[in-house]
Length: 545
Image (cartoon, rainbow, N blue to C red; front, side, top):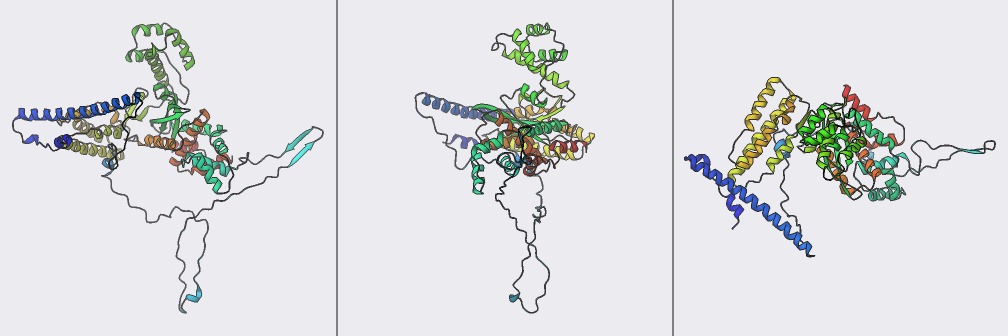
């Protein structure tokens, strides 16, 4: 007997049951079935995991992880739910409108095939895209002079960008293929070799990773210009590996730029270090002490810290020196150290004139309390509902019905963003409280609805700041680019490689947002022509416009 199918076959219309007591009992029984079925499913999974671990300890193999051929893991994406109400955009009939015509070739008709009365009526256009890839090897004849009086040789310099064995076109192409097209280093070597360029894998690696101080500065300039360019910033993170160790690549962005930062951790101090552009400081004033007390720092520890009478802003090294005196046993007092560091760093950041006021993220704990306002992503919130797996048909219908109302409200918020009014904001606040006070009788769904209600302030910040997106898709798309990078490079080996990866992904992603050709931009910088405006300047221009 298939228990799951049998339970799904139970369909009860509770509204048709006249006796309130019976209706309540049946509703509770359905919830008990739901809980027991889910618990049984989790116990089976845990039991199999323990069996596999036991087999491995015996030197045997666990159960193979065979992916189903027809049905994959549960899809918790909300793309279809969010977009099915939108009108489909009509495709442009002229796909070649934006093409630049490099040359025009006239095709003649064989006159001998024409009848005597044929009259010329002009030309019919046919656009064909083509590209030529061929080597352009150059030999530079550098003048050499020798001064007997000075006993010194003078040799002419190569043009900017041509130092080494390869010119700016090849260097920019290597950087673009790796950072933008996500091509592996061996594939780049193979591609160039097929087109007559003799280059080694070691050289390709050097082009990608070393002597990029200029580009690292450009990344810093992009972040410096991007932070004040909008009232909000978006953040997310995804996994990365550096020299065999698990790390995290953090994505910081808004509509004008996307920046990448690979760090060992994803705690609050890491977020603050990124937002403060590496200038992490610590402040010990009454606000900081009150914050520590709020974060449950023991009273005795707080008094010992106050006794230090710290009156100035400290850097990380100075704070560590003080904490090492207070807590010689680092492992035992790990939590106390964390509270002190986070609270003092948050207060120092919020008092900085360059601190951002609004952060849009998912509901991860490391983002909380860092900024004055925290906007939460509606799409992330919806995923919690999509993760519910009701086995009872009644509960499945209730979930589907509620999600319809959920996305209807979401689209009302989208409409409000286009034409915000105070009256409209008040109406939407009332609708939010009504919708997320719903009681369906499906206890797991009701518990989820209550949790959304508690996030009212963060989910409805858009009513006060309509320019803030309703979702965190921009940073998630940025994180996806790092995930694709993992497909071609399992890990970076050192700091230089990690820095280069973050820098060029930042430049490429930002160039795309600003409508700049990333390859041409890289070529302009490698050749040191600087004919194209800096990406940071373009961001600043958006900020002032």
